[in-house]
Structure formats: structure tokens, C-alpha cells
Image (tube, rainbow, N blue to C red; front, top):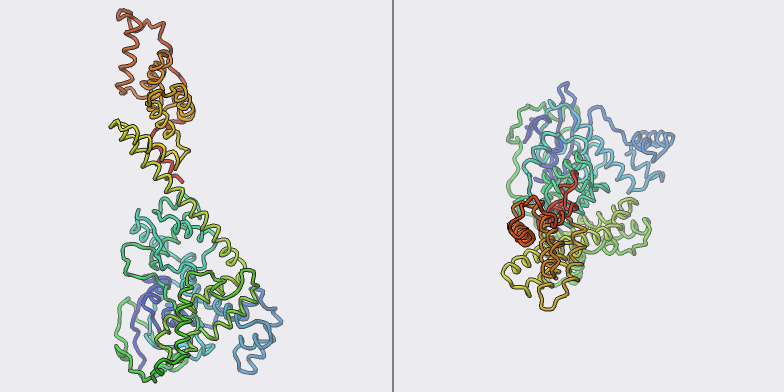
Length: 578
């Protein structure tokens, strides 16, 4: 039989492995990726529904037993004896480990995933001239290793590879396209499936609480800048962010189960050194030699009896489980929050016997997709709660969410206060004093930390008939002690001093205003009137023995000019430094 041609070809220089895996997951590719180095060495990765399921390196590197010894899972003596037994009995090495009680099934699966990740890490580090080809719907690794496909967790795997192998130029290109747009997580983003570390998860939680541009996220200093760039790059290329294409779902949001049986393929290729022909570089798409029908062959099934009570009951359970998609992992698995890892694992295995999609007969085809989503979340819950560090982070997430919600509410209060303050100033100019006072009180109630709000409210209260001006001046004194260069507050106090007949104190405030703002016309006029009254219009301006000197406390220290500013502009600059 003639060897088939690859459906896609390229080089790792033009399309690195990370980009290949993103493309494969996006298009749910099933088939074999073959990598051929310049010296002729060939490596292969089998993709099952978009996710790596098997990998074989030239020379058979990354042996499972050696990796388990390195990780401290088994001793070297145990490895040697089990390897010899597996070779003598012609059995899979992993099955012997489980049979002898050295590993349980779950630990073996995790070890095999780690082995697969290391193989892909090796392939990602191959020279850029390495040629790759994708053989659609062909499994060149069918007779290699276990007959079962143990699918990798694709998003977690992609994130691992991004951290090690993302090219800075590609990262920079994507971030440049993102630009200053607000980073907003997609509502269906399956971020838990990336298995982020503590710092990366903190970034995710902040984005959930308050969508924000990259520059603001960098200022929070949650993670080092290079890692933040890689994180945003990865979120962007896997569509976890809403960047103007709401119709596109995030990658991994409908991830199928992590284990599936290999279906029989027509004309399986021979296994051996000639399992694939040399690939021509060039990055072009080549029509596959085998024809794949655009529509699947019809499958004859027996329709379930109308009103079958068993099917109706299961459909009701599916609906109930779907309603629990926002419930906690503990509720989803039916265990208390104090449950041990063993109890969680036991509950998960019982659920898997019922909810694994592969266990459903054809009579349940109408709910198979929903069951797949349910079981995927059950698996995610089990993996999180059975890992000590991930469980601790998950348990703490409620407190973090509460903190983030509190921060978001604080931001909203500050924004409401700033808006109310601006409305109060406008109403004051219109002489609508009652409405202005109402807005000023609202601003102060939402954000009592702002001295400007207290100053405006004190001034408005002083405009009422019979108001205690000394009480208002005392309130303004406190504001000026906090904001010695606030022109508006000094103007309010100067006017109140003038109304009380305390001209010497009033003129000090007016002079301080002119020093701060030489173009303040009203303060200049008050100074001229004061001078005219005290000099009789004849004494030269240079001879002013009766004029008190300005309040020198109004001058800004040389290194503190950045703190000048009043009103809403100063508020917003402080707000967005958070």
C-alpha cells in the first residue's frame, strides 16, 4: 500500500509546537504528528480529538521506570525487578507496577501524563529546521504502549510549554495586538484546567474581580513581568479573553474526557521503521491520499422505548447535575468539605462508573454531550481536591473572592463619590445650594477619606442662615492641614474669615492662593481691596507694615510637587494607582 501524504506540513521554526497544539485543540484534530530532524531521526505524537495522547521519541527515550525512580515514586530495585518481570511476561510495565501494589491506577495515569509532557517538552526544544507533518485520522502509534489513549490535559500542557518555550518575539507580537484594551476573562473560560500556580491564579482572580488593561495589571506586581506577559499571551491565543470576537468559545471549554479507546481506523499502517515517509518542508497543506467522507456513514440505532422510565430518570439526573455546575467541587462529588483524599477518590470512582460517557449506550446519545461536560467537571474537581496544594488554594478561593468583591465594591463607591462631588460643584455654581449639599453629603458618605469633600460640605453648610462660621472654619482647618496647597479650600476659609471681620487672617489665605495660582483673579481683587483700605490709597505698595505676611506653609516642598492638585483629577490619579 502506498504511504499516505501528510495533510499539513511545516517546520518548528515557522510553527512551534505550542502553536501546533493550540491549532490541534482548536480544530479537534485526530491523527499523528510526525517530526523529522535533519539527521533523519523521527518522533511521533498521536492526537486524540485535539489533545496529545501518545508520544514516541527516536531511540525510545523518556522511559517510565527511570522517571518514576527520579521522582521518588519507586526504588531502583523495585524498578529493576518489575522491568524484568514485564519483559519476561511480555506485559506492559505499568500494569506490573499496579499488580504489585507499587502504584495505584490513578498514580500510574498521572505518571504516564508526566512522561508524555516530558516527551513533548523534548520535541518543543528540537531545532527550528525540524520538519513536521500531520497525518489526518491515522494512528501510527496504535501498537505502541497501552491500547488505551490516555489523553493529556491539553490546556495545562500548553501552559507548561509556553513557560519553557514561548518565543519572546511571538509573545510581544500578540501583546502588541492586545495593546491597551481591557483584559476581560470570557464567561466560559475554563481557567482551572490550566493548573496555574499561586501567583498566576492571583492574576486570574484580579481579572475576574476587575477587568483591566495590561498596564494596570503590571502595576499590581502580582507576578514577574516576563511571566505575566506569557500568561496574557497564552490566555489570548487560547481565547480565554474577550477580545472582540464573542462568538468564539474559549479553547478547552468543551473538553472531552481524558481517556478514550482508540477506534478502529481503515487500513491501519504497518508498524516499523517505515511507518511514515520523509516529509517535504514548506509549510503547505497537501491533500491526504486517503479519502475521508465529509459526512459520517449513517449509524443504525434502536430507538429507546417511548417513556422508558430508566432513561427518563437518567435525563432528570443529568438536568440536576447541570444545575450544579456552579456548585462547589465538594457538592459536585457529594463529599463533605472535611473529606479525606481517600474518601474523595472513592466517591469519584463511584461517580465515574455511572457518568463516564464511554459507559453510556446508544439509547443515551441525546444526553451524551451534557454527560461529557458533567464528567469533565467531576474529573477537574477530583484532581483539584486530591492535590494538597491545589485543594488549599481552592478552599482559600472563597476568601479571595470575598476580598476581590470588597475591592470591587470599594472602587464603585469611590467612583460614585467622585461623580457626586462633580455634580455638587456644578450645582454650587448654579446656586442650587440644597441640591449641592445633598450631593456633597452623598460623596462624603461613599468616600469619607477625601478632604475635598469635607471642605465643600463645610462651605455649603456655612451658607445657611444662622450658620456657625467658626465651626465651618474649624472643619476647613482640618482639610488645609491635610491639603495645605488646596486653593479652593483656602478660598472658602478666606471668605469666612472676611465675613467674621478677621481681615488679617483672610488676607493670609488670599496671598497663599495667589502664590499658588498667580492667575486667581478673585484672590488678587481681595488683596487689592485690602491694601486700598489699609493704605488710604496713598502709601506705596512696598510700604505695607500692616499687611500680615503670607502663610509660608502654603509652599510646596521641593520634592513633593507631585502631591499638588485638587478635586476629581487628584482623586482619579490616586484611585487608579491601586
